[in-house]
Image 1 (cartoon, helix red, strand yellow):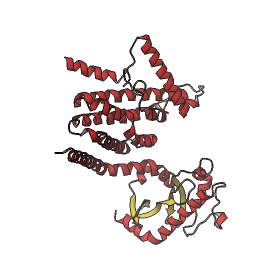
Image 2: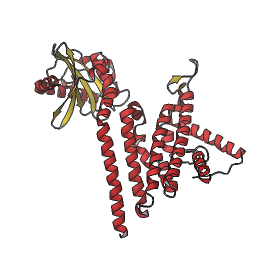
Image 3: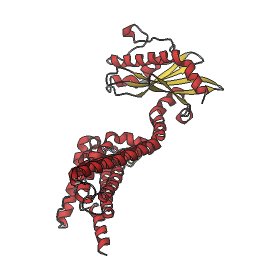
Image 4: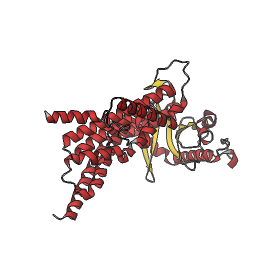
Length: 195
Length: 207
C-alpha cells in the first residue's frame, strides 16, 4: 500500500473509532447528565420558588417544544389538580449575555409566585444584583397578563439602578413566559396529564 | 527480574524524578489555575491521570500502525476522545466538581504532559510499560496538585477539603487563593525540591 493511502486509511479508522466511542458515551449518559444539571443548576431556583426540597419537584417535569427550542416546565400538584408551574425562560439582552430565569406561576390564583435567576453573567455589584430578593420580590403576586415593563419604559417594575439592560432582560423574559402561558397553557396541562 | 525492575523504576520516576509540574515542568497552566482548593487539585489530577494512562496505552499499542507523518494528529484525536469521555463522566457523576474545574477539563487535550508522554515514551515503548509510565506521571501530578491545593486552601482559607482546620482566630492569607498565590506556592515547593535534590547529590533529570 502506498504511503498516502496508508495515512488516510489509518487516520480515518482512528477518527471513526473515536467518534463511535464518543457517541456511545454520550448516548449512555445523556439522561444522567440532564438530571444532574436539573438537580444542581435548576434545583436551587426551584427550591426557593416552591419552598419544597428540589428532589420532590424535579421528577415533575415536562418539556414542551416551541419553534424547535425545548422549554422545561416544572409543576406541583394540589391534590389531583396542577396548582403551580415553574417555566424557564431566556431573558434576552442582559449586559453580559442572556439571562436564564425561572418564573413561578400560581394557576389557582392566576398570579405569579416569583422570579428566580438560574444563571447569569452580569457585572458583580450592578447587574448581578438581579439575584437580590429586593428586586425579585416585585414578581410575587404580579398579574399574569402581559405585557410587563420597567418603570423607565412605562411599566410597573422598579429596575435596578445602573443595570437597565439587566432589568429590561428580566422584563422581556417575563413577557415571553406570560405569552407562552397564554398560548400554550392547554398544551402544557395536557402533557402533564399524560405523564 | 530485569523487567520487573524496569517497571518499578518507571513507576517511581513519575513520583520524584520527573514529577510534574515540578520536575517535568509541563502542565503548569492548570496547576496554577485550578488549585484554589485541595479538592479541585485532586479532581484535576485524577482526570489527567486517567487520560494520560489510557492514552499512553492506546497510542503505544498503535505505535507500529500509525504512520509517523500523521502521528501528532492521531495522538491528538485519541487524547481528545479520552478527554471528552472523562468530561462526560465527570458531568454525569461529579457535577459540582466539573462545574468548578470548568474549562480546564476540556483543556487537558492540549496539556503538554499528555502529549509529552505520548511522544516521548509511549511512541517508543510497549503498551504495558507505557501505561505504567502514564499512571506514575498521573499519580505524581495528582499528588503535586493536591499538595499545592492543600497549602493554598489551608493557609488561604483555613480549610482542608472543605473542613475547618485552622482555629477561629486564624486570619486567612487571602492572597494565597488568588492567582499570585499559585505562583508563590509552586515556586516555594520547587525550591524546596531542588534544595533537597542538591543536598542528596541527585542529578537533575528533565523529561
